[in-house]
Image 1 (spheres, rainbow, N blue to C red):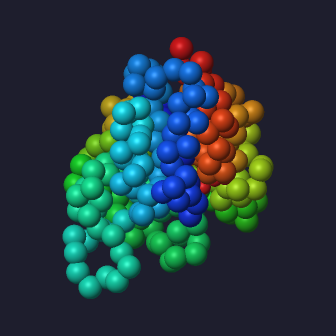
Image 2: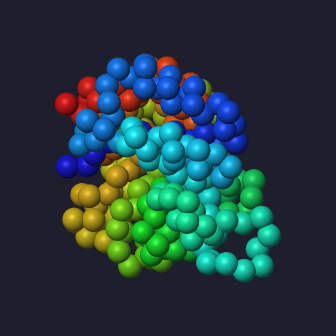
Length: 258
Ligand code: PEP
């Protein structure tokens, strides 16, 4: 059984001073200990580098996972401004977002760099949450499956075993726009992703892989998204910044998981 995963992507938001109130607020709003429901729902936040250490300290007791939002694929070297997976591991980070569309769009991330980062993370035992998704123009041109398949195969061709690779399907047109994909639209692409994984990596890998949906997920639409058979969780931007909204989403995920 695939345990649901709600992953918050804080992007370039929050300071260390804000974190204690955030985690305290989340815990109060939740009214349950996440550690007690780990077999049903996992929670993770992807934070900026300067927040990682404090977030790990505060999240650890609640069994909330903390991820970085990017990494380099090489161990070390003359790459000013970059962070290696070894550096993340050094402070206890065990997960990383890779190839978010904002990084593809604004920072020249390519299918090749996304594949190299995913491969490096898996080899280090760090869980990659690797993002794929089409733009509005691509969707309108009926290229959704072709684009997602290209992005996904670049990654799957690079890794020998998928390990605990998590794929996030994030249609670019739905990110931060308030226009989520409908649950049926998302389910169609998730099923397609699972089929591509099946063809490339086999039945067991496809059955085990968690595929998250991201793009304007919020407390009002998360339950319906999560009831779809191939949607195993959410990657949530805006609605992960407020503890009350995110707590509502976690509670909805728990209800679906029952
Ligand atoms: C994201 O940044 O991954 C995301 C899905 O953002 P939002 O939920 O704000 O659309």
